Length: 191
Image (tube, rainbow, N blue to C red; front, side, top):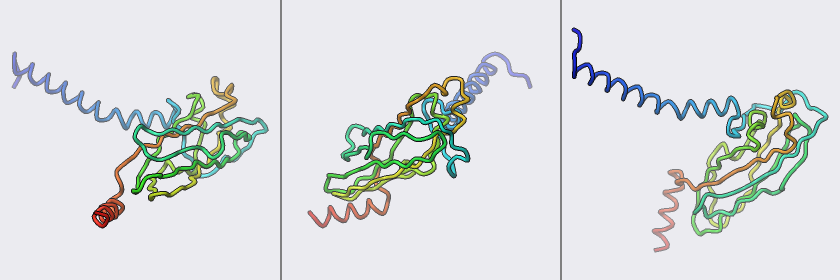
């Protein structure tokens, strides 16, 4: 049965809407995958272990910390920068403090600058891989271990990078279920 006139137009329009919906649904995971593979937008890589080779050439890594508006924590890097050999594993710490009288959960987003170095900056372990919950008045130091992949020296653009800035932004998230129940119980007991 061949469709004619208005029926054909309706089927074509519905098809276009379905295709556009599928593309918009797939765009977020595809973009995330693309950024992780290419380092686009300063997205870093994740590694199971450190680099197999360490070069004599050094690179400086700077550390930056910020918070989303309304995030009540204090958040800062413990040290402002470090210099290490390309391929050498570095260990840095960030400090977070919850000055409030309630537990607060947070998650960190991250990137590196310049963007051309993103694909060569590999994290082995990082506090940003999981959500953090700080109790009232709690202060913690959170580690990140990383290395700069020696392949950076072969990249047409990234080989001229001498300083990389690792930036984290903490934002508040909902408390995990167990913590939320404790927080509600504390509120009930104080009222």
